[in-house]
Length: 226
Ligand SMILES: Nc1ncnc2c1ncn2[C@@H]1O[C@H](COP(=O)(O)OP(=O)(O)O)[C@@H](O)[C@H]1O
Ligand SMILES: [Mg+2]
Image (cartoon, rainbow, N blue to C red; front, side, top):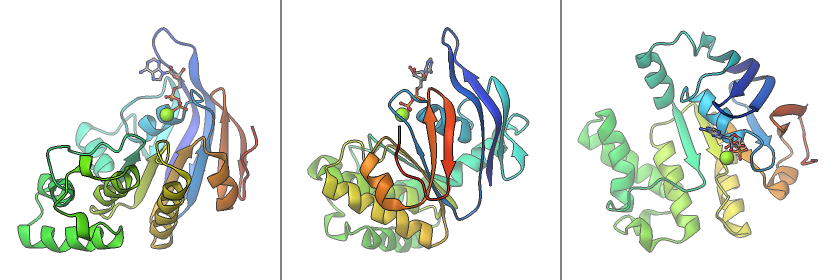
């Protein structure tokens, strides 16, 4: 589904951030990509989303080389991916309900359908009772659950979660990881980028370890060892 073939990324006026990175993620997998801050995790995310181009090597999305994909194809790929980030990326002037419904409005979904879909996803993530609240009235954990609702409402085949628990306490961290596991069990491919040792060691899933921009380990039931 996603393939990196000898990808090296060098930003202008910088040394290589990713070096000769090769891996493949299959449909339905739950893969964690771990590494310290600065290891190149967000750069890797941006390459998958087509927001950056590799300096050397190729990135494939469903067999399609991102380098030859045109703007509308990249747009389509981006829309099929649910993104979850450390800083939530919520719309502060919109309510919980509107934060989710807006995602579908942009896509041009019919009104009746929007209501049904938004209610379903708010129920799933446990924010139905707060649907008229604004983001600033939510706890950190609730804000991240809302961000997950926004990612899920488009029924993405792939979820990319870049440090989704970076601002959360241990309890809310597990809530988020539990949700990601549930989404994966329902069929979505999940890519989790993190430097959180404990969640990785509890997950018991595939782990790709990045050190200084290189993959030093890729194990089916990996642990956090750096
Ligand atoms: N747009 C950019 N231009 C120049 N350097 C960048 C840019 N984005 C990230 N970097 C550098 O690349 C390295 C890896 O960053 P990043 O991919 O954000 O790592 P991580 O997400 O693992 O913390 C860092 O040294 C960072 O300063
Ligand atoms: Mg990062």
